[in-house]
Image (cartoon, rainbow, N blue to C red; front, side, top):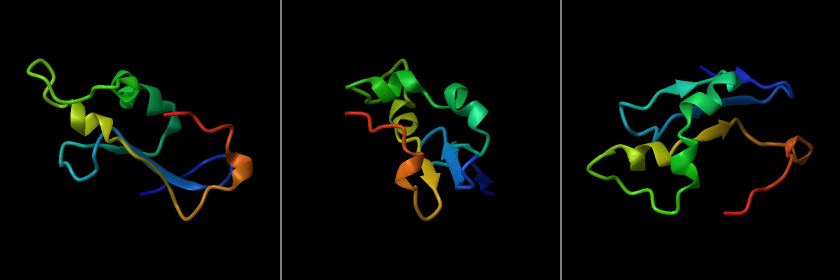
Length: 80
């Protein structure tokens, strides 16, 4: 199951660590904002807590592009 971007690139993204059975994989870019936990992604500390024991898995969400991403498809590189 792979999907193509407007540039014709095949991609998938997940809502967490792909090694976890709970993780879901998507190919619809319109879902990325609702399925990726951006608050956890921006956090400096993202360890699991008693209130949220799934933070570490969600922090390991992946966006995978098959083979390569041409530089003309990049809008910028974000600092960490």
